[in-house]
Image (cartoon, rainbow, N blue to C red; front, side, top):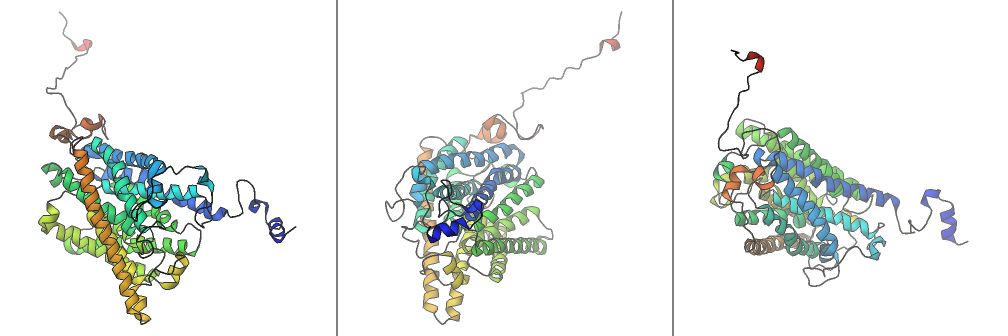
Length: 470
């Protein structure tokens, strides 16, 4: 009996190799990866379904929630049929992979040196792709034609998201060896923020009275959806190493520290400037913290996560609460939930700060290549300013690439769809809301836009016992 057989025979029986447990297979990594993937999936369904359905005006609750649910299902089919290979498959161009079916017999093979099967990787990257499209939808709530949305989802996934994912994350992408983007500050959040803003421009604004008065229909449910989003980010950043290791632990801790800091800073600024603590503001601050830490969660120290949280709670607050109200540019585009500020601004901020705070030994633990970083701060401390500035240049280049590509691709997609169906609902449907679009309403209450008969006839029935008899 050789050494390997002797070693295996001394292990507990649950570690023994069999047909379903190859020698390369790590049960702990696999269990954590499936758990993390499920947590990220629950950020979208039910997380963003609840958040969108409750954060909008009552007459748009069903439509907003359904946009998220539809996108989740549509992206999954597109992902396994062609988009996964476009994002992570064989190189077709420096920007995108060759389209192909992901669920081949190799789906259970070891994936690129990780101790999990390819099936784990395909599913994990799907939930990333799905939440990106759903985040984008936050800019379009309250007026986009649902049929146009049904076309937009697969087209944007194919021609925009896949390009960003392949270019920055795929092993053959032209920016993969240069840009630090741990879990999607650029690929997911910057792209969704920019694409949402551009799509909002092409779709057009909500009705004037909706834009001026758009209160959440259920703040308690909104907090529930936000809770799914926050806690689900444990899987978002904790699952990115594809191993139950120290980087995953650090990423999870940094995620929550940064988020809590950002939320408290945002609420503090609301109280200082507006003299009230806003629940909606707290949710926005939570989101910007989650977004900002994403590109650096596993490669920065906890003290850096605190600084990133302070930045994400203040800079996006300023762009949303001050600059947005003063700028004709921002006022000209109706970004319903402010996705540009919470995701594009916070995503760029996180990407740049990751380029500053990325620690050398953490980069070596996370990535097999030594080409990344280190961060500008550590380069200055080591007297190697040139390498730090080079990394910052790559971070800026990555952000510019995502911005330019999404502006162009999203514009072309919207223009193409507009030749088939209207991007914006008809005015009479905008007056009514969910009942006109889906024939359904969120609450069995009268008085907020549903269809009503032209005349209301009331028939008073008098009980026979009370009638006057001759």
